[in-house]
Length: 108
Length: 351
Image (cartoon, rainbow over all chains, first blue to last red; front, side, top):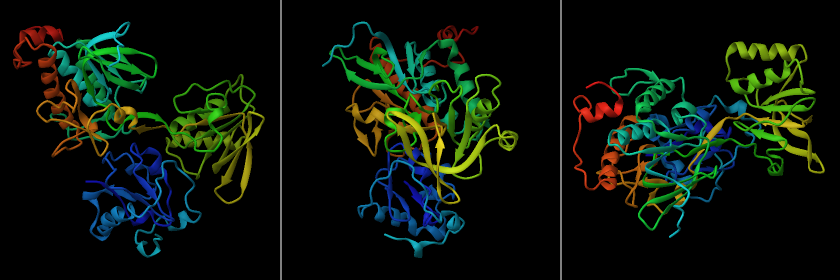
């Protein structure tokens, strides 16, 4: 199993999660964070940190976000750098935080 | 192999991590009459139960339909008390090495040295360390002008203090300084990236009242850089939530962002690791090094579930395996706590 970042993160990228990850398994893209499933140890510490509840265990991912399981794995393998320290959210994060269907906004 | 056995504390068993599984490990070792020392990086026992969810109910502890993390830890501490384990808190195990005589040498961040016949790694997701303010050039200021959760803060009298955080601890600390009747700071600024707090409603109200009367100030912003005069910090430059930047006078910066776990040096101890977790044999919960066991969230094996109740099972079997290692001459007979006079003596109860 692994934990998965869902579409809620896109265009927000609050990055609170990366601060608490004990194994530094987050990877940073231009407007999204992804969890490397080969590194995640399922500790669940990051879940409550996300202000938009974007992170969930693989087995709890709802039907309309199932594609994010594979997408997290794929995006972890295209060379996005590791992110281990919190940084400011994207400037218009608060305008996008309530949207959960933002896949078309994802920048690779 | 190193010889670190002189002038070190000798023990049958060392448990690394005083979370629920580490505490139950202590109990099971005690029942099998293995002397036990416990080390934890936090100042109190409890691990994740206390750091991450002290007040949230847990519903899957057998025969305890509902208890909070804090209640579970209190009950476990009560359970181990008769076995008088020795706790070494507020220090992290940095080194773990095999000695020539088959024992293990352990060194902690506080300089403590132990030699143990068996080691139990109940390290959970790692040791809890303060979440640090990630700004370039901050390192030399830490401990002088910049302080993090759990660290003693230098004098704040007549100094400009900036506090970062949004929880009860941060607000209480800001209020304590802002309302101080003697030796008060020159100014108190509370900073969080937005105007919302994870604190009691009453505390938030008192903080707002203190701001309204000018005893302190709240700024919705994030720190972006430091301004120093020589090697002394003078200002914290922040990006305001509603745009723009401001340089806050700052003689003392207190970052109260709490603690977060870091797996730490466990990965450096030469044990077989899979996805950053210790591989164990499910008969004994021994790692790839005989005599070193791993229980709870830190281990992995086919079918592993990260549940407290599974950790209790793991700790039980690990204790029996360790007893067989420490006392190969003694029969490893199962003793029921309901009937065993020996167990009753250990627990200080009448048979």
